[in-house]
Length: 107
Length: 117
Image (cartoon, rainbow over all chains, first blue to last red; front, side, top):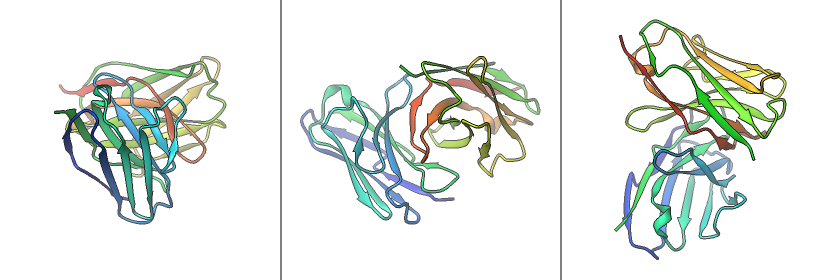
């Protein structure tokens, strides 16, 4: 199985800050990497698919980048409604595997 | 709009089977892929498997001997059965729609299942 190492586990930032969250795969996943947002008590929401494709309806302050084994989710200007847990998913090979999650809060 | 809703018992006894239903509205399960994912206490997530538009299945090898995913196209529902559960199967279970290359683009809100005597 491909192991996904996500960092940091917890992140506290101010409104307007640029925020980055990272996922590192144990092997090349060929950009088959998605990012999800889960707010408390809600269904996970797809933000970015295949590394850098913004899902319809997602604000443009969210972006993704990466290649090979290293991937990054960036929020360009943090907003209060971005408080949530974020996690990555690799779908390069089965079984699909997830990052451990990053809990993002506002300072 | 695509919507998914999980349902099933919130409490299952050890050694019994866990059975959940995912009801889908706004999209036919005869297209795309339909999967189950679970989130353990402590937040680790595990992909369990899926059933495809054609009815073929793929399972996580870690569960292969215990899991079955089936569907009822007339009701637009798909199902999870996990046999011989233990306390380690306590988790929140989610159903989701998958795209051809694995992206999970719509999820249900999840149902918490506790395995306890």
